[in-house]
Image (cartoon, rainbow, N blue to C red):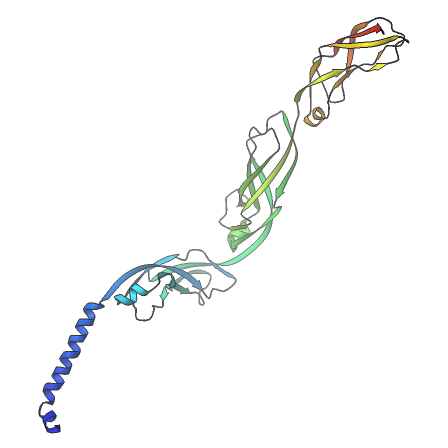
Length: 305
C-alpha cells in the first residue's frame, strides 16, 4: 500500500491542488467579492475643550469590498468615520478622515480622504435680550408694559464672534397692534454695527408679552337720573324719561372700561306734585369726554290711586 502511494504521490498532490482550486472557484461564484459605497457620518474626536470646530464635513463616502454575504448581513448604521483632533491647534489644520472597516471588509476608497479644519478658541458669555420693534403702534394706543422671556441668554461659539457680540435682539411686529398680544421670535446676536453674528444662542427663541392701552376708546353707556328728596304723601314717581337714553363716551381704555353708566346732576323732587321736566347736565368722570353734555329729563309724578 505504501509502495503504491509513493508511486503515485505526484498525481495525488496535483489532484488535491486541483480540488482546492475548483472549490475556491465554486465558492467565489456562490459568494463573490463585491464593492459597495456608503455615505458615512463623521465624528470629531479628542478635540480639546477650549477649541471649537464648525466646518468638519458631516458625511464622507466610503467604498468597501468584501464577500457578498458579509455585505448583505452588515448594518449600515454601525459605520462611522472619525477625525482625530487631538493634535490640532488654532487656525487651519489638514487632517485625515479615518475609518475602521467591519470584520471581513476592506477599505477601497474614502472621499474626501483629507480635509482642512478651521479651529478657533471656544468662548461664551451672557447678554440681556432686547426688543427691536418692526413697524409702529397706531397713534391711538399707548404701551403700558412689555415682559421679555427670557430676560438674558447665553451665547457661545468662536471666540472672536462671541467677543464681538454686544446685543441679543428679538424682532417684534408692532404694526397695527391695538390689543394685548404675545410674540415668539428667533433671537439674533449683533455687533455694534448691527451685523448678525454666527454664534449659538441658548435658548434660541424669545417671547415678548405686550400690554397695550387705547389712548381713545369709545363706548355706549346708559344714562341714569339720581333723585333727591321725597314727593308729598299720597304722590309717587310714576316714571323717568330721558332723551337720549344712552350716549357715547370716549377716553383711555382703562378709564372707559371702568364706567358702567353716566349720571345727570341730581334732581330734587321734594314736595313735587306735578311732572318735572327740563335740560340737565351730565356728570362725566375724570378722563371721560362726550359730545353730549346735557339731556332732556321728564319725571312723571302723580297721585296714588
